[in-house]
Length: 353
Image 1 (cartoon, one colour):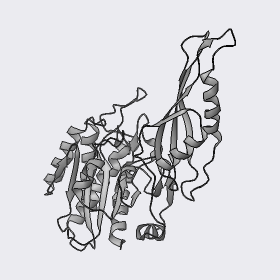
Image 2 (tube, one colour):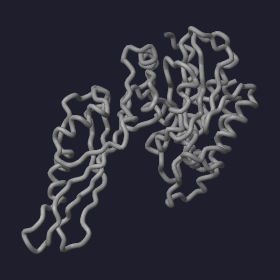
Image 3 (tube, one colour):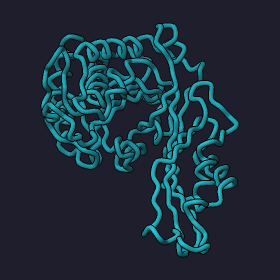
Image 4 (cartoon, rainbow, N blue to C red):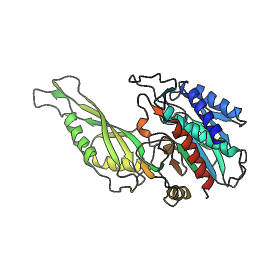
């Protein structure tokens, strides 16, 4: 059966790569996924560009596991040398936009769900969801169906992790900062240079260390990534604006981190959102214990995923390699998909709450 499911997964991946599905524009890939699941006899539910199915042996009172991955992609860069919207087989690779992030995890989790559709022996419920707007953290993605899929006890989020288990994930908060000075002529001792004022705060962002360091995720990381100031060479600028990328660990919510930041800087600080908080699964959770027994490497992920917007205990795991994501000539090895399906199945067969 696994060989049959693997072949179906590869065929579906070909269709998905051939269909542009940028964030907020995933309608056509949602149609393809829904049609595929219906062809397998599944009762498909859909909201926006999110598609999900519930295991036919769903029983109230049992724990429920969500298998989720996303079918939207970033836009291809000009550095691509292959057609991004076509699977090209070269040197044992399947090259195409979204093949690795997150086409391979998406089709592997789908194959895993279909494998268990034929089993009535599961001690838990299964729901599979293929969702949109992950790449832009959009509110019409998985966040929009949380109230529709019911309570979840554990979510396995399909992202390329080399089938290693990400047991924690850093949160993300973007800050728009503004240092205010006074304009003046650059040739005279006039004005209050906003760039110099911003430099003081930027140096604080560069050097400050939050007290609580995570054993899994390490310290909170802050990076100044954009800056803008000045209109002409002979005028002291009265405004300097800069952007800070903040990656929080599980010891700080984004709101808590912002409160600490505001205590130390003099510039205006406005957060774009508090939505993307860090996630963490306890080390004694049955899934983590099982993964370690199976020899699966567990680690903390510095990148964000849909874990950031779901309120459930969750992990991130899938075939492929995060280092290939968003790169030109993105690819997946077919064996990674086959082995991904096998490992997902083995985990769920042995998992006990």
